[in-house]
Length: 303
Image (cartoon, rainbow, N blue to C red):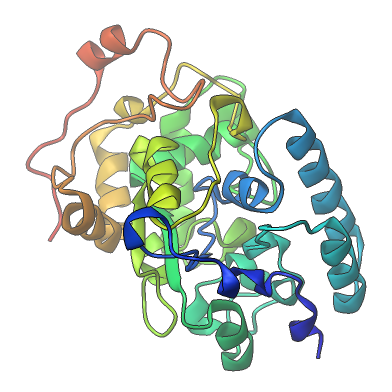
């Protein structure tokens, strides 16, 4: 099988990081819309404009190829010492899940065929980003990509984030669980066993949070501001623009995600409005003004 063609087995020989800390023992679970593509790019090609060009070229080539063997050849040709090909860059994960219909790389690993999961995760520490649900849905709306996170042109043209997120939630609750490449699945499902995320990385503090994890685990990967792939549309909308009715739907759908944020990072206020201040264009330009008019819906928390 093609699973053994990966040229990425060099990690086993790497000495422990300074201070005897963990060696390169991580593997990514790519939750959609959580900076997974940025993470994959850094791990495969490093930082900077040349790395970005190599990444975009490989991603396009993998997407246009229809054969696992051919994809492995592309990956092996792109590989250099220390490269890791995680998630959406791993050829074995392009096959569709029998459960979700999405590619395995966007599907919770509890649904993967066991042999593929064992080959991909091995006995490594499975890490993934955990993102604030309101803020994540705002980003999907702003991304406006039909097959990924959804496109809502009728709302997008007026930047009506509240109308769009309400529609996302009502569609999900009506049974459309795996829509738009599985972007609406609760993040908690990617933490479920078997093969669940062991190490949650705080998406609110991205990229610093992930850079800290990389350093702790002996990687020299470092994400700089201009390495980050981020959304661009409707730049002035944010979580504080969602109505309390819409937020109540978000709490209903993503109750377990809010629990994980509380457990892992101490973010226990389900009504908090936040945005990612370390990533360009992820907060409104007039954040302090926006805070004054933001919805704060205490007392509607479900659970």
